[in-house]
Length: 85
Image (cartoon, rainbow, N blue to C red; front, side, top):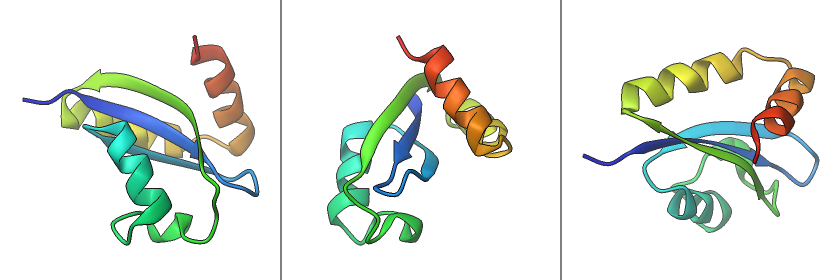
């Protein structure tokens, strides 16, 4: 069973995108160069990974993703700063 991760990507215009995956590097590559990436991120590159966190199970990752998505942009920015190493 793979460990799930929460990640946050910043677009060229400063927008933040939150997602979950078992492989952050692969997922960032898909968002950047593949049709498997989120439609929201198409033509918004270059993309920058600004946060990632191992979470555990898919369910836990999705719950945390939902909580982060409920935050305002300024709250997300604060989350990134306060939770990054």
